[in-house]
Image (cartoon, rainbow, N blue to C red):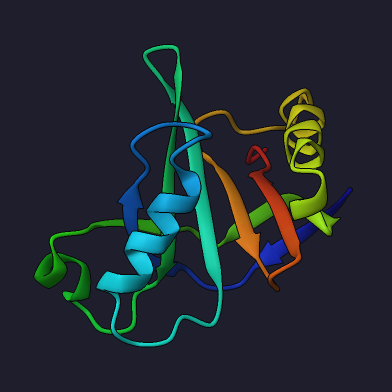
Amino acid sequence: MTTFQLERDINLVCLKATSFPAGIRAAFAKLGTIIKHPAKEYFGISYFENGEIVYKAAVEQRDQGEAESLGLETFIFEKGTYFTETVNDFMNDPSKVKDCFERMLALPEFDERFPCIEWYTSPNDVRCIVRKKIS
């Protein structure tokens, strides 16, 4: 696990999955049909709400107002300091992603006010990311 500095805000267009984890693939598939430009990288946003995990599939917003015109939500992946760990070949063992986030959520420096981020850097690799508390 390492830390990294995100140097700029990344504005994302999001679509909420109908359930977690079963609805994740369908959310990404539907998002792919709604967004007309090719997405270079995909993101996942997850957090607890009323005792359940909420998951949103996301891509970077290309144009201001794109989300609103498509009836989608927005999220700002804020610049700052984050903990990160890459999980390689996650599709062969998705539990590795869960295990990675469990380790990160146990860190005393984890900022629980910000959701967990998955940054899909390739079809096989995902960066698991949580924000570090500002001291």
